[in-house]
Image (cartoon, rainbow, N blue to C red):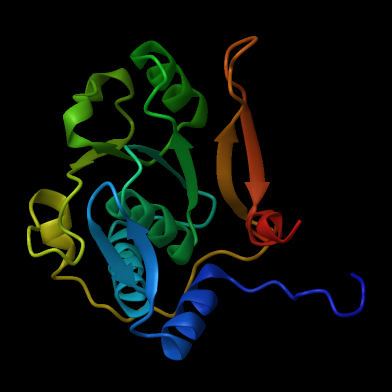
Length: 196
């Protein structure tokens, strides 16, 4: 590694550091949803997700698939999974349902989080637990379903289960010329990718 290059930090450390420095600063703003979330609120939601995954017995390199619209709620699940140390596999909601099911079977996740409005067939991959969520409920006072249940989880979490060499994400090629293919990234690759 070249001198002066940033040293790897896990998502949990980054969330804690940023929340300490900028607790009330807006971290994510969603104009479509007409709401935002601060660094402190994001850390707390990601820690709740992590504690939920810990209770479920998820381990490093276990894959969790997400199929949902762009929203603060989807991002909190995404970063919460990385915060815990599991591998996240996001699937574009614009994929055909046939492709969504094919990709889920390719990834073989332990959990599938999906937007409630998508009405996905849970029988398409039975080894996973399927959890639907809505696009309201993160800091807007309209919690329901899964997100409402997350509010009961502790906002403190400081023991991620993964190392930098463990699987961080499984992304997919666009599939414009062929069927989408899985591309695995380590947690270290996920960290350095935005720096390139």
